[in-house]
Image (cartoon, rainbow, N blue to C red; front, side, top):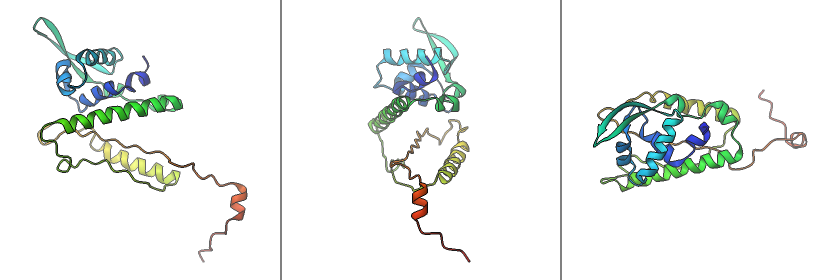
Length: 194
């Protein structure tokens, strides 16, 4: 299974989320974190991620006669690199977006189902808005977002920290205006700054 097929699945994305931040977990721990996912389904997807090199076994112990493995996420394998991203077809993007939205929806419902969930106190946000940006402005803004996130990606679990699922989705909503030669000749010239 290639990286795209392996990672672009809602349950496997949720397993990746559950193991982020350097956490080590057993399949029993993952079952407790994702109680709405049937155990057999979760075990199958953990196996696929381990076979695909996204998860690595960091320990084993006997529990009631069975071997329980503890897994850690291999961050270098838990992402779609630039080359794979550039090779994605439109259908791959549709599939990937649907998987990401399904995982996000499941995670949000799991949060709301927890005792004491308080979206206002927890600063939950899901706003959307329109920004008018040139390609250069968009590239600059993406770089700024990456810098902000990169400054915190190596945070590890510790008292006072809780994992936060962050999603940034952006895409053009209208066809981009591409000026034509005719259009350029019919528009008024820019005022002279002098």
